[in-house]
Image (tube, rainbow, N blue to C red):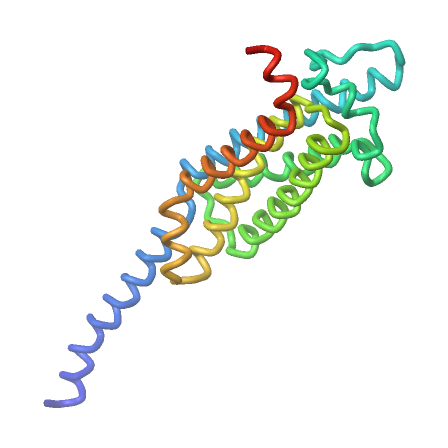
Amino acid sequence: MSTTAHDAIDEPQDEAVEYDEEALEAALRPTRAGGVLVTVLGALGLLAAFTLAVEKVETLLDPNYVPSCNFNPVLSCGSVMSTDQAALFGFPNPFLGILGFSVVVTVGVVLASGVRLPVWIHWGLALGCTAGLVFIHWLAWQSLYDIKALCPYCMVVWTVTIPLFVWSTLSAARMSSGSRLVHGLWSYRLVIVLAWYLVFIAAIGEAFWSYWSTLL
């Protein structure tokens, strides 16, 4: 068979391989629905952080101000906001949330519009969500076992940060690796988030059981 004949056979095969790679890459990229999810979660976190920042400013302006999220001895934003942990870096923590969630919402809106972002941006989002995840776990530990009070708006931030972390890290990993482990974890991402929530609920129930039991 002539060289020309070989080329004629190989060319369609090369095109098919290239098409398959492009199709696989497109399938692994976040969908618009994923962008909507990131936008909604980011917006909820941003709203909670902004509201908490306003409450903090109100308490600074008026020492007698009672935050709107003071419900009982356990669910009390005021008890948390007055601690050193609430301003870990020398300024109120909610300002970090406003900055971070603004970035999350921006990325989410871009993804929801169908724009294909570079993989490094997805890893940047994952890194930011990882930092947020570490921070909320530290704050949760402090709230449960040191401050011994819960801030409802903070808990909203905890609630949205966990799925944001799971989605962003697994999404970035899927685009960067063909690992079966990554794809397996992606398939169970909802289970992972729900299990994480259950751990938080159990910890909250155990830490404040002496109070919850009085309500039964």
